[in-house]
Image 1 (cartoon, chains in turn purple, red):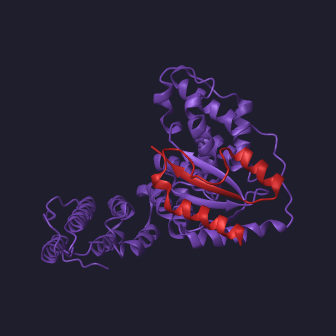
Image 2 (cartoon, each protein chain N blue to C red):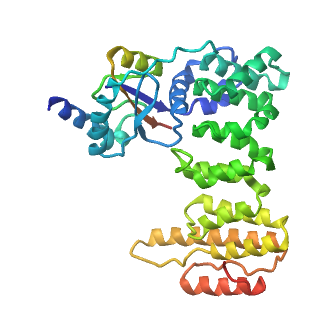
Image 3 (cartoon, rainbow over the protein chains, first blue to last red):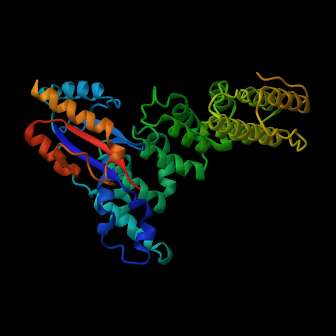
Length: 343
Length: 58
């Protein structure tokens, strides 16, 4: 077994503070180690910690990801040590920029934004080729994407449907970030595919975050199909999961510009998303946290209903979320909404 | 048998100790590579799979 330690200290994420006016021409040592670790993370789409992967060095195929138990790790090791007997054609590196060359270009662009640093047409064409070419090294492809998000977001947007299919979470997050800023109704089906398939038909190491990013990109641009996809998740409301509050807010935004039938459906979905009452137990701190999160979700539901109906006189969320408080509030809310029931 | 004991020892370290290690230091035991290029080159040369341990420090 060859052992690789990939530890992020996030210096690269704070590069603007670290550089603070110094020259970006060379990547300073202060974040060289973090950049090396980041490239390994990006190569395998890692966005949560700690994680362990065993891969085949010939084609970088992931052989397995063990759970955090000794038994799981040893079982994977035994499997991996027997996995390298099958011959695999080693792909020779293509003639393309290295990640470091692209990271330096990114630094120059960031530092030169106020002075108008531009990318030549020849280099822009190269970046686009790297972006769209399926066989490109994924780290190089991601760096090309990060540069183009600054220099040519329109071209990225045009390629968005294909780019959303790249099986790498950091890559998809970057494309989804652009779509959140510049919504595009033509990619609704692609976004819903990510939302409904994350972690199953759409392989992802962080499916909840992938769904969150897909919903942000969808924003108010979703239609009835999006509402049904959201309803399936909100049928079992989970106030501890930020995704559920985001879905509630997005339902309100979609409903604000929808027709009456869709609005009625959204109201029913929102009423069905009202979280369960908090049942106090031995752990008082846990009960207080659950109470706070449940009421935060209820406030989001109230705000979405207000957005939907224009009615600002909806009942205020109570100060605690015991069974009686919840039932009284839900009854008052349904009454204010014209007697509509969850559906 | 000896190999299994060695692997089990390392696995136990990985599962049990990450939060106890000094910031940014790899767990004790195996000869860790610190770059992808070195690790891949070493693995290809020796016909070995690569175990990658992803961590973070603030």
